[in-house]
Length: 267
Image (cartoon, rainbow, N blue to C red; front, side, top):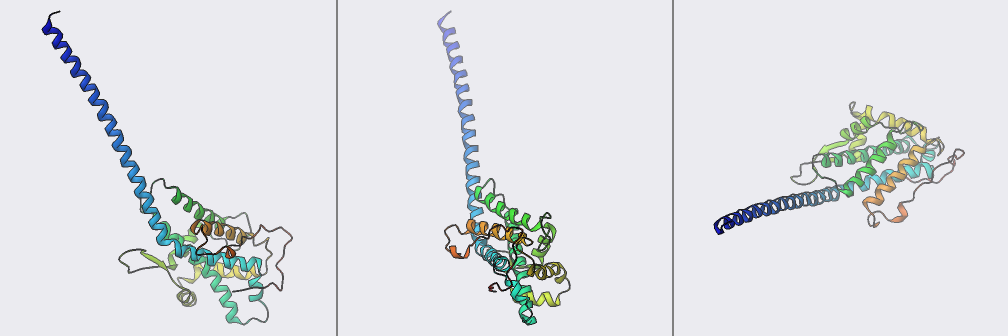
């Protein structure tokens, strides 16, 4: 083989090797770029999820605390036994009933607002976001379970409907696009708005039922209170906004428990 042929073959081999190496490097670069893009997307999703959570944490935390506190007072302290006693005037009784219903409706409203904010964003596989949705789903299921006594049972469709009628748009250019009405507006609409009231009448009727029921019969309330404490622990793990003494978790009731007639109660 002459020198010219050897040089030609060598050049061809070098060109082929160079092409192969270039292809390998290009493939590696493409994979690296894709990996970096995915990593950035996940990081952006985590930042966005945390921003939304921070934005809605306080109202959701307050609503969860209000509701768990009311449920604790009903079951553990016999609040409604006192409120529905023979010597209680109608105004106090109505307040006990209406604020109990409001506490449920307010919580459902803030959950729906948060769900809507999360739904329209690509938050990816964000662990903290998944954990939050897990807590909300557990409470949703506790409301709608049909294998325990029916009082305070709210199926998923009615949960969302109650949330919608409690929701009002904001005029803020940034931040939450919706918020929940306050108790004064709620009370006014409950008395005068014929489109508003029917969604809440079953809950109002349940208040009178749970007033005389045993803790075992009211175990949906206990289950809800336990799940709400779990949510509060998630939203405020350092116990800064809700101190530890206000997070007393009710124990599961036993069948022979009854509500003491003279139990201490607070509104």
